[in-house]
Image (cartoon, rainbow, N blue to C red; front, side):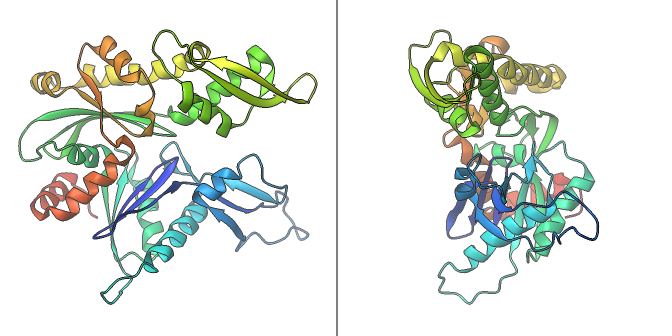
Amino acid sequence: MAVDLGSSNLRIYVDGKGVVVDEATMLARQKRRRWIGLSAPGVKNLRIVAYGDRAKEMLSREPKSIEVINPVKNGIISDMEAVGQLIGYYLHLIYEIPSRYPKIFKPKVLVGVPSWINQVQKRAVRSIFLAAGAREVVLIEEAVLSAVGLGLPMDRSTGLLVADIGGGKSEASVVSMGGVVVGKGIKTGGDSLDEAIVNYLRMKYGILIGKNSAERVKIEIGSVAEGGGKEALVKGRDLETGLPRSIKVNGSEIREAIILEVGKIVKLVREVLDESPPELMEELLKRGIVLVGNGAKLKGLAGLLERETKINVRVAEEAGLTVVRGAEELMENKELWKQIRLVAGFKQ
């Protein structure tokens, strides 16, 4: 079993079944009471109302007694209890999948993690899956899994720059020989672009919209390319009157809203290129830069990076599933698996 525990999406691959879970990394539960003392109610065993995409649909629409939380912030687990409940729920669903073989539910789990997290955060990830019933937990950098999914040979000293633009973070890494040579990450991703759109419309038009509406607008007409003839209808609350209001926004306005956040991603890629070993530059020029993650689908991003770095940039096919596809290839190729674990260098 392989798990891509992202800030926005949770994806689980099961050997022989394919990708069986592709849901939002969210859950809705009873709201915790914020006061303490003898009169405060207990906070253990809070009832879970919804998981995944159903919980995301409830965001900013939930009643007062319910809270919708995202337990993974910027690629790092911020609520271990919630992540444990989320993982346990989906592992239980996977156990219910019909199979002709007897079920011994103690799976071996491969988990993709950012290359810049520390050992304490890695132990937190491992403890959650062990508590959920895993027999063994193997942590591999997401950049390495992406490179495997993109077909980079791991038995030769060839380099590839992978830029992973996710929901809560962006990471740029140079991968060679099954390991990360240079890797950096920032807390800027798709969620930051959504917040930028919300703030822009509030300042310019005095209208307040939700993050789901901002995400929809970003997907429909969002682009960092010059120009923008497409328009989208946005509905929200007028901050002056408090009444419902709808406006039309065009692609140029969305570009103006998100261009500063996108500039941070471009700067990240340039910094990684600046720190890359000179011996790998020929390979990087030959293979170019590959964008993965759902944030890579932003229109015009590949062209902007290409203009800024003077290196060919392309978006991977099924960019959001690249990490899971790499894990699938790794689990099927035993020799590759041995080499990656050897290069990883830490006790699993």
